[in-house]
Image (cartoon, rainbow, N blue to C red):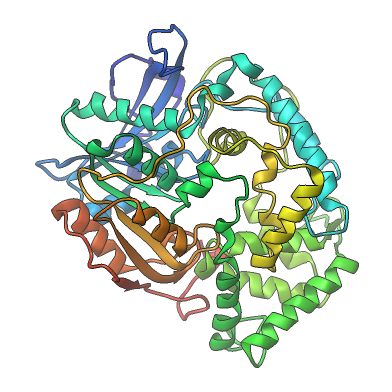
Amino acid sequence: FNWADIPPSRTLQWHPCYTTPPNRSGLDCARLYIPLDWLSPSSPHRVILAIIRLRSTSQPSRGPIIFNPGGPGGSGIWALRDHGRDLQAIVGEDYDIVSFDPRGVGASVPRIECWGRQTDRVFWEMQDGADVLDAHGGAVYGAFARAAALSRVCEGAQGGEEGLLRYVSTASHARDMLEIWEQMLGKEEGLRYWGFSYGTVLGGTFAAMYPQKVERMVCDGNVDLKEWYQTVDYVNFVRDTDKVMEAFYFFCHQAGPLRCGFWAETPGMIRNRLKDLLAQIRITPVLVPSSPTDSGPRLPELVTYSHVVRMLTTALYQPIHRFPRVASVLAALEAGDGRPYQAYTSLDQPPSTLPFCPTEGENPPTPSEDTLDAFDAILCSDGEPFTYTPTSYNTYTQSILNLSTVVGGEQATTRLSCAGRTVRPKWRFSGPFEWNTSFPILFINNIADNVTPLVSARNNSAGFPGSVVLVQNSYGHTSLAAASRCTAGRVREYFREGKMPLAGTVCEGDGVPFGEGVVGDEGE
């Protein structure tokens, strides 16, 4: 399927798409012209949104629910194409599930891209300076300079003050979503929406901008709205990171040595074992020798402290699926064997063979799970102007490390991408986030989420009277990190019947890390 085969239009026109393989049948796609600048909608400058719909299979249809997978920069096209039926199974097959690639993302055009050629990006990322911020004493200062240099590249590539970056704040995305909804159903019916992670920023922003347009809204894995928009010190997001790390120690110990390769006699001993490994590998990286076979790297590789911290950072998002394999990798690294690390992390890497010639043409790009440069562009557009110096950012990094003691050196890079940014959004919404919505919002959060802590859900809920926080007793990022029949049932009741869970409701997950019958990454 080629997105260029769909002609863009000013009204929503659906076309069959992704018709193979058979499990993707029932999908329609559209490309919609919308104003680049919603404050000057009569301007001739336009963007084209890529939109996708999974049709209901049961009649009569209850209509659409718009879904956002997160990011910022996550592709709604990619997520719905591959996982839409999972969502539909929860709410009911008589709903259409609709998603879109936000402006600047995925198959929407123009796309936020810092590099004209993919090879330029690869060469940039191959340069020195990719350490986490606590790897050595000068890491923050080098990373700060590198981030500022990349900001200049990105703003130049996007046309500076005259380009796309002035028009990619979440306020514009929320207005785009309203346009999509009204194109589908007219101006009378309120929005039905389901957002995860950054999707809670989009949902919360929509609810604050258009409170009387909310018919149903589920926000799962909540970003603190006031912190996202109104502060420079972005720290709340790491409040529960160490709790998820503690879950690794606890469930590894509970599982025993047969199911956890990094087992020790107490959770505290596992914690100390990891601490010792990180200290050891900081001084003596582990060599992965080159291999003439496809099972190893073509060139020798070093597994450094920064590599291990990044691996752990990623694992905290999906403990059930990642912890078992990561435990085995840690044990191998402890023994000086980096090959399991290389095999494991290669699952998360794109193919190493890249085209060394630029691709010509203006066709919409093939959507992927993330548009890498969009995260920074949207985050920096939404937030307060970045005023840190290298020295003050070093202090900020320490405040993150005080809260997130194992992987804070990686998490502290989140705001660093705004260093050197000068382009500010023409339209930026920053609150207030206290409104009576036309129907109460359902907030969902895991008991411990590594980047969107439970306290953020409670903070957001406090501004929307009648809303409820449903807690799932699971670990990792959003309730999707651990299946829960209980949570799925509450979401279904909310959308279908308008039934809110009682305040204080806690749903159990259907599994735990290292549990029997849980398949790790190698079985996904």
